[in-house]
Amino acid sequence: DAGVIQSPRHEVTEMGQEVTLRCKPISGHDYLFWYRQTMMRGLELLIYFNNNVPIDDSGMPEDRFSAKMPNASFSTLKIQPSEPRDSAVYFCASSDQDRGVGETQYFGPGTRLLVL
Amino acid sequence: GQNIDQPTEMTATEGAIVQINCTYQTSGFNGLFWYQQHAGEAPTFLSYNVLDGLEEKGRFSSFLSRSKGYSYLLLKELQMKDSASYLCAVRTYGGSQGNLIFGKGTKLSVKP
Image (cartoon, rainbow over all chains, first blue to last red; front, side, top):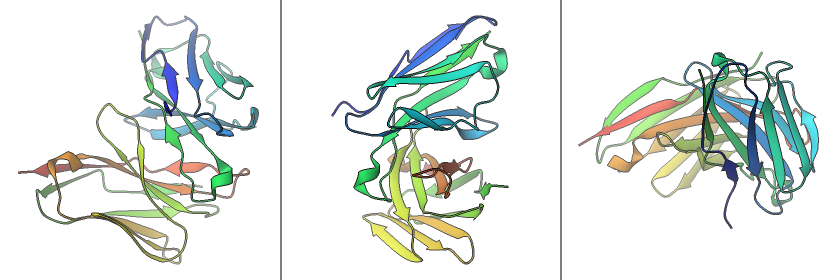
């Protein structure tokens, strides 16, 4: 399996611009998670989906952030407008609940976002 | 609130044993995970505990005490490649599978 795929791997943009991050989960996984990692706050869950339906978006910082999962093999995280404080590494992860409660989440390589 | 505490940094010598502690206070508990994260890379799964006691997996072991809200990761026969951050994460009861709440990680440096 190719693992979780994220694109782009690096993104540099200017404040006010729209940023779209993309994720392809592992085939057959029914959970998809979006995380943000910074030195100050560590790894934080932003939102997660089960069978393409958003379950918990309480971690989404504000209305500038939105996430969609139109089908089982694709999800996007959008920031509009972007701000310098959004600079972080954004990880997508997926998991398969049917494999048991001990089943872990598999992380993608992350997108390094820098907002100038 | 949800709180997971780990030491920020640790240093150990190649070939030695190191123990990384994690204490947690969460609104629910449905398992504790340890992840390894090398610099610039994604976290990768190391271990899972849901019952009290020790889980051993090769050079790595993880211990859990639910009554004390405490876990540790034990790394034996340290190698240079073990230099990485180690993240403790607790799964709570929120949601069908539950969220993972992560500690900020412990950066381990292994010296020759």
